[in-house]
Structures are given as structure tokens and as C-alpha cells.
Amino acid sequence: MNLKMIALALGSATLASLASASPHAELAKGDNFKVEGNQGNCTAGAECKVDLLLTAGTGFHVNKDYPYKFKANDVAGVEFTGTDAGGKNVFSKAAGDFVPDPKDEHLGVMHVHFKAAKAGTVALSGTYKLAVCTSDNCQFKPVDISMNVTIK
Image (tube, rainbow, N blue to C red; front, side):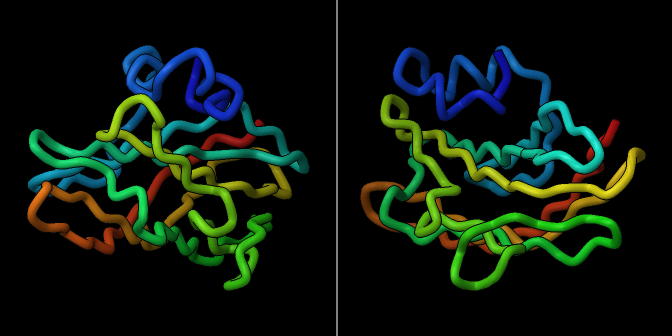
């Protein structure tokens, strides 16, 4: 099972089990977090999804109250299909795109939806605003994300 099926699988599995079973690429890393990307099957002209898996480091947890947001940069031939009030290229917790793992406070996933006009490789990039916390303080980080996605 891959992270693309996360919404269906959360009732029976944790993000941890999905993350360990799925191939993914490290996109960003800080002292107390990492962000990994996973793409599902993408076909030209159809809805595609990339999942950005946030893992908090030892002693830290994903801040479930933070307004997580990923703002994608414009890409020729790509139409983002987000529903956030900030625009179709904005994906957020408020729009239902960010899901913290209900069983593991160290994990959360941001879903990025788009359609690509033609087959090939598309370089998706943008800024991901995230937060990881200890019981005493939080670290709020905007990180630049870049990921090549294969479109069939």
C-alpha cells in the first residue's frame, strides 16, 4: 500500500506503517523533522496526487493545531486543483489537505492535487509551512520543497 491511499487506510493502519512500506524521496530535513514525498500513478489529463509525509524527530511531535500550508509554484502545463481560499495552488489543513496521524503524533501528511497536460517529468516545487513541537516549545519552519513527478 502506498501513501496515495492514506485517506482510506487511516482507519486500519497508521501513517508509520504506510511510510515504512512505501518508496519515497527525502525532500527536506531539519534538526527535528523530515519531509518525504511520494507520488501515486499520474496520467496526463487526470487528477494526480503527491503526498508530503512530515515526520517529527525524537522528542518532537506534529503540532495538530498549526495551520499547515503548502503553496505550489506555477508550472507550465500543470493545473493545481486545491480548494483553499488562497488559490488552487494552495494546500492546507483548513482545506482538509493536511492530515495528522491519529495514532502516531510524530506523523502527518499533506496531499497536493493537480492535473498535468502531457506525459513526461514535471518539477513541482513550493513552500511548505510546518511545525514540530516538544512539550515546552514549537519550531515553525517554512521549507522549500522540490520534487520531480513522472506523468504517464
